[in-house]
Length: 183
Image 1 (cartoon, rainbow, N blue to C red):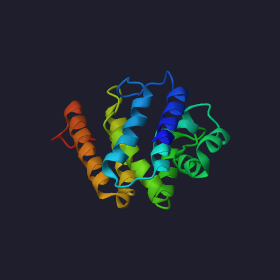
Image 2 (cartoon, rainbow, N blue to C red; image 1 turned 60 degrees about the vertical axis):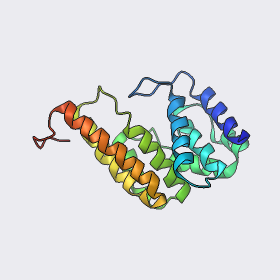
Image 3 (cartoon, helix red, strand yellow; image 1 turned 180 degrees about the horizontal axis):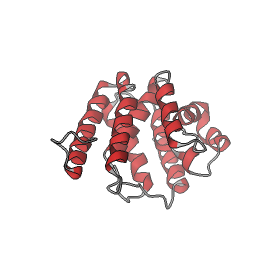
């Protein structure tokens, strides 16, 4: 348990001041939710997977280096985090394409973290997003998540429940539940 608390402490310090786009909550809440989803839906999950879940955005969104992560958490956690890290120098469409092409070859642990991350994110779509951006995001999220469903059926069902709720909310928001619009 102390290993997970260390990861939470490092993540909280590194992400200090960051907020979630959709809810305005402190970003650490998202990281806690991702690890909570894993502990709730995956039996006998390794502490390294929970640590990586808490740290999954640290390399792309903070100044923490790979070397620091390796020293504090070891090569296994670093490998999981690196597998989940986007190259922010690339355009969004290219990053999304990379995620789609790489996720199928990833380990079960990486797929579990990605699925829990998407489960959290799909419930927090920013209300300022346009219909097109929302529809594109929901489509891409479903594609990536479905490639991770083999990692855990319970977590896959949780994702689908949240995805369906977000899809219905978007349809109601954009007034096209029956009109055949984008969503």
